[in-house]
Every structure is written in C-alpha cells, then in structure tokens.
Length: 284
Image (cartoon, rainbow, N blue to C red; front, side, top):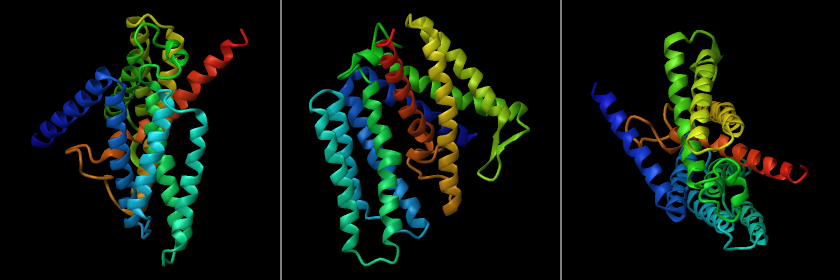
C-alpha cells in the first residue's frame, strides 16, 4: 500500500511538472528537457559502466548539452540551420578525445558515448519542435490549429494513456508474450489494449481542439508502435547489464530513462510524420 501511494504521488508530481512547463512557455519546456537530457545521459553512462565500459561522462555530457542547445536555438529560429553542422565536429571531438585516454576498449567507449547522445539528447531536443510552433508553425497547425501547446500536451497524454492501457489490458487478459527474452511481462494483449486506449484518447483530443481526427489517430498509432520499441530497447539495455531500473530519481518509477523510454523513440517519428504531411500538402 505504501509503495502504491509513493508511486501515485511521484506520478502526479511528474505529470504536473511536465504539463505546467508546457503551459508556462517554450523556455520552460526547453529547460525541463535539457535537464532531462543531462540526467538521462548520466543514467545511460552509469548503465554502460555496469557493463564494463568507461565513456568519458563529463566531457560527453557537456557536448550533449551543447548539441541540445544548438537544436533548441534552431527550433525557435534564433540560429540559421547552418549552425546544425556544428554538431558533427562536436561528435568527432568525442572520437579525438578517446585517443588520449589509456583504455582497453576505446572503440566501445566512443560508440556508447555517441549512442548516448543519439539515444537520449537528440530525441529530447526534438521535443522543442512540438512546443508553441517555434520556427515552423505549419507542422503544428496540422494537428493543433487553435493552440500550439496542445500538440505536446496531447503527445504526452497519449503516451501515458497507452502505457496505462497496456498495463491494465496485460494484467487482465494478457497471455501471449510479446518478446519474453527481453521483457517477460509484456504481452500482445497489452500492446493492443494500449493501442485501443491511445486511439480513443487521440480521437477525443482531436474533437476537443477541433482538429482532423485522422492525424491524431495516426499519431496515436505511431506513439504506441515506436513507444513500445523504445520500452523494449531500454529493457534490453538494462537486462544486458543486470539492473531492474535505469536509476532511482523517481521513487516508484525508476529513473529518467524508465519514464521516457517510449518518448525517446516515438518523438522523432511523430515529428517526421508531421513534416511528411506538411510536405505532402505542397503536391496537392
């Protein structure tokens, strides 16, 4: 009972911080996910250390933060897209720095350092393109014509609904294992239960904000499919190093990666979908 109360209270605070940041403005969104990027990157490196690898945490975390800020500044149209090319030299710098370290597995350290940025930092940075239209309101107006903040709120609402729906359906009727060697508790029944819940919520969001329901249903499907892949990927990482949670920052919920595993995979694909629809309009 005590564990349930702690988990529920943590979840309530967690949701309140995210929704509050979104409603407050784009800079609070940027700060929140910058913090999540740094904490998530440190969690990822801690997991890699348990696996016997030694990524250079301090330098790579600083580089990760710089890459996040570059992407954010572009998202709000502060910098030209040419500044994005700075990202590549920063990644090369990680490779160069490893040369001067005495370590038995330099290639693995480089690979996991860069993987941490690709897996954690860039997806969090891309969430800034969901917030308030930024430099391209066109993609947000497709699914949130009246208030741009509802895209990011809707995205998280569907993600959370999918997780809850999958848990409820899996607990009630789950029998067929989804991928037992990676995540023994996940079932196909849970996956489809989460999908049904997500589609229902996506439809009601579209109705509430007077948007095209087809797009919100499509976004719901993308979130469930790629969110599940993100969940399985994080489970595989944790299983490979022999840990249950990525961290203990959130009592009852684990770490940052535990709470955002689905978001890290689904966000880039939702953004790609919006840009694809926006591009497709040019040919109509």
